Image (cartoon, rainbow, N blue to C red; front, side, top):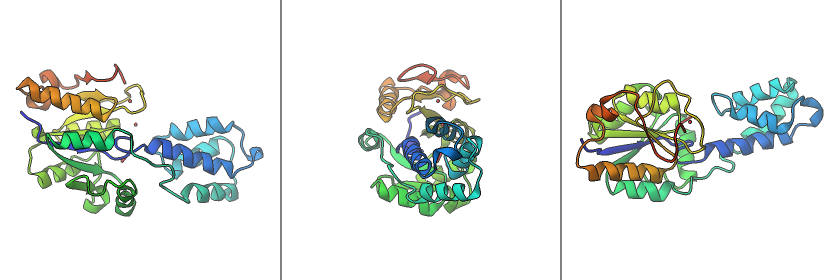
Amino acid sequence: MAIRLVLFDLDDTLCDHRSSFRLRVEAALAALPDEVLSLERDAIVALALAQPSHTWEGVQRALEVAGCTDPAWLERASAIYARDRFFGLSLFPDSVAAVRAIQRRALTGLVTNGPSAIQRAKLARLAIERMFPIVVVSEEIGVAKPDPAIFHHALRLAGVRPEEALYVGDHPVNDVAGAQRAGLTSVWCNRYGQAWQGDVEPHFKVASLWDLYRVLEEWASSGSALFPGGILGGKRGAARSRGGDDDRSDG
């Protein structure tokens, strides 16, 4: 069955949220003196990046592990971290061109978790607020990934069935497992060359959106469905890799 709809995650799929987060953590650390930190600053940044969610809560946990527990210093670091939530945020170099190419083959949409004001402002900051005919923000509909309901909402807007849709994202649970629970073909976008850590294998692994485009081209030129019933080769959990084997992430 042909893919009629390609849905995209936003953070760490279309835009480099991880690098922006790193810059914000480094700025927060720069506001703290060495004597309140028991670890090297690079180690603290690594701890923050390793947190399940790239938010201030994760930064604070990393700082507390590094011995910074004084509320005054934490408040100072938090103020610097929050000063510009989009500091250093940019699209990956392939995002616009690859999405435009994919749009010549299929309808596209965006499904992202987060507060509406933040995610909508992010789209405007990145100048892609009009790129997608379908944009679903979790706060606006009261349900978030990995709940299948948010994917089904996007499907209803597009007027397509789950087996006609593909979802690409970086998060093993929110994106890959969530999309598969909703009946969509899942694509793991591994921008940072990490090892896969999820319980549910994606149908495809790609390192870039051009890799995704090539997958869709191959699918279309094959003249038949690559995933009978939405599952590669008819076996749940099998994955086809693009850009390296056993390659990894939030919104």
